[in-house]
Image (cartoon, rainbow, N blue to C red; front, side, top):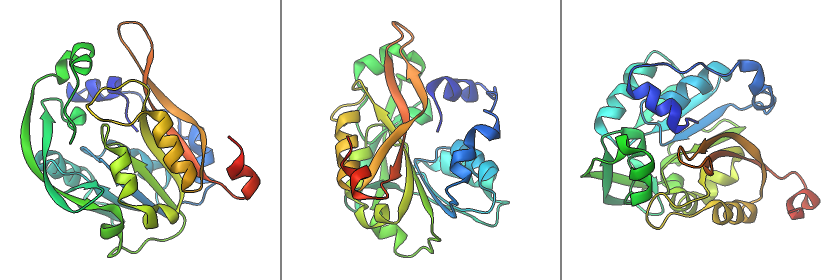
Length: 239
């Protein structure tokens, strides 16, 4: 997953230093064979996860045309990679996306004023039409090799992706989900809501990989939360 700091550096052509691979040993130990990369932008996560799991199939989903083209340029040489140009949500539809000049901040939800104030380089937005599909619908035509990792980074639209993909999520051994602790977009769910949804689907919260801090007061705004499939009833019931 990518933090706003890493996103900002990338936007200005500066590559942030990558975390050493040995910090992802736990991820390799899960024996992941398929990765669903939801909210791929230009391939930041796909590039990282391929370095960690070079034998895994990667399916990336990105609705913005220019980002999709750059994603394919970055990843086209990989035989185990496919990209799809649409957003994921709770139903098939054509919707307006609030496109930010800083593309990783684009969302199907309107940006709140606090977001623009904290990160002024994201403030300029305009509306584009994009295709939306459900996760369950799109994976029907894909070969998913167990074990499955699903990454969801969709700027406040996480609950809609989850509601549109219960059967796909049932195949997942692990999830990496960008969760928010303060509302940065209109009508977005916060961590507690996402936690409850995923607990009901049989996942336990297992910690966070990265956190985004407010540049004003240092409070935690977002994190990349890890959820693992609970392996027994006692583990699932523990809160």
